[in-house]
Image 1 (cartoon, rainbow, N blue to C red):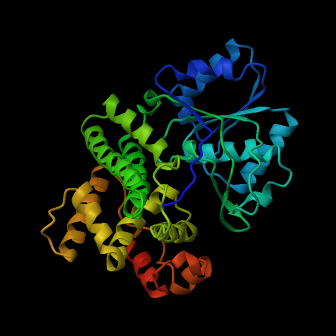
Image 2 (tube, rainbow, N blue to C red):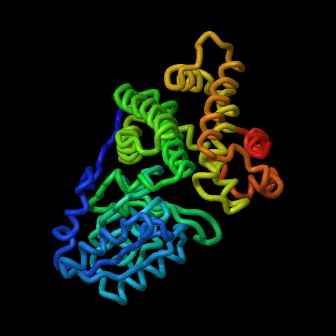
Image 3 (cartoon, one colour):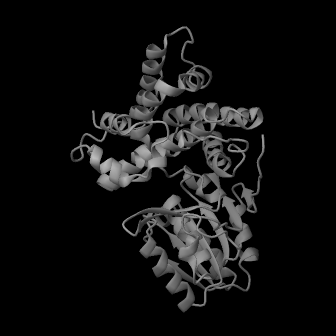
Length: 376
């Protein structure tokens, strides 16, 4: 086993973490990056701006970042330069977070495009950057990766855009409705499960991810019964963070579950659906397809994490495991199919949209079957 681990972010967790803002931003000119109107409706925006006003810290709004697009990032960089911004605070979910991280990085890199898809190694330079997650799920608050859409007609990633501080107040998630709460836990579960079944080298990392998976399931079930369960919301917020901070992937040498994201990518590109909707629907189909080659791993997930009886044969186990996940999704109001959208993408579309390495062990025909199952 061989790996490196690095995470330069300082994390604050608790209901009083916003009190750090005046000290962290003293003497700076701030850009506030956020998505839709939810951060204003739930009072988070007001709490932040009141602290900035009270401390005499000037700020500029950059709202409406409901999707992290390349053009939106470029426009934000231009605004930051025009306004003399030297600190960025991004508030909300993954789209706002990825947009803010990329702006903080790109504002000091005229050659930002060179860093997309790992073309150049990050030098670590960026505007001072604070993340305030209010919709924990994908874990973008805990890493230096920015997903963006609309880059040369496709999706792309910027690497090495690390934030400095993450302020996590679980009470900010209390206003999430049933569906958003379910998505929050489910997407974190899916991402973490990929590290769990794809890890054959590091028992410690695998054990950590297993505990997180069980806790996520328990927390989601509690919140579906009682949306005000504070401990459950705390667990999901911290799980989202540790999911991507690098601990779970330590020692992994062949991360085949990456093919799950290839399936969901096709759905996103074909219909413009959100990351969370595409990944949730793709997950069930991918588990069925992956069982052909990785049944031992799928069996471990279903028996050890979901508690499906181990005496079932492979086909019965996969059916029972997927059925339990499907019922959990339905209980949270999460769509389990894309049947309401246009026709299923063709094999030609899939082949054109993915690189050969994105198929992993799967053939084009098998990838097409997994995509097709998302529409049944």
